[in-house]
Length: 232
Image (tube, rainbow, N blue to C red; front, side, top):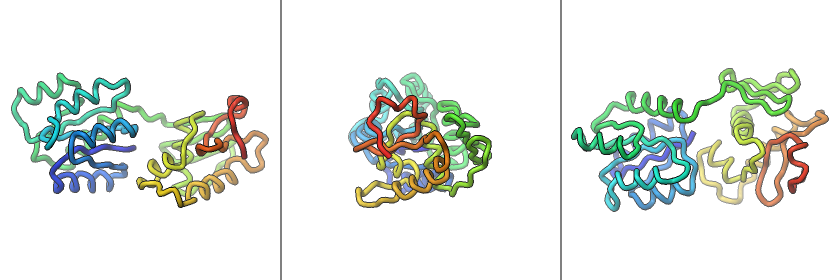
């Protein structure tokens, strides 16, 4: 899951970022309101952690703009403003939680996990045709046969199965699985997709992993892809 931390104080931003990454989350940091609005518009975040004292735009205005979008992630305000009026205003404008600085990271992490569970329930199992992925036990089977996957292979497959029928670019896959920027040169995604195809599709009458010309890859049952521009 991907989290946007909006915090202009570098020491706090680095502290929060390191802690969240250690907990297994992908994290982006914005140091001002304008850049945070651009990031939140261009990237589908699962959660936003928002400071109110930003150098260019008040954090409450950022919150209001994010909340006015058709699709908005949960927002946790993390601010030094500790007056009751500030907390009430933040919650009334649509914040899902409010924490006051200074704070204990263990409490922040607990609140992050609670918001992610509430805002985006994670199914225990994902299934496309006869392909079954157990998110909790991290096991994969196809037609009842167990398939052993490396950690990155599992993460890519899980991402694809959470987005069935949606073309996923190499950039999207890299950013969600590796938490890094795609430089346009690496073939790491293509290599892992080949590995996945050899384990998931080879020897099967029905192939599930498709190449979408000019975009990337997609996982879908073939009867739903007949009218789409696909190639192997």
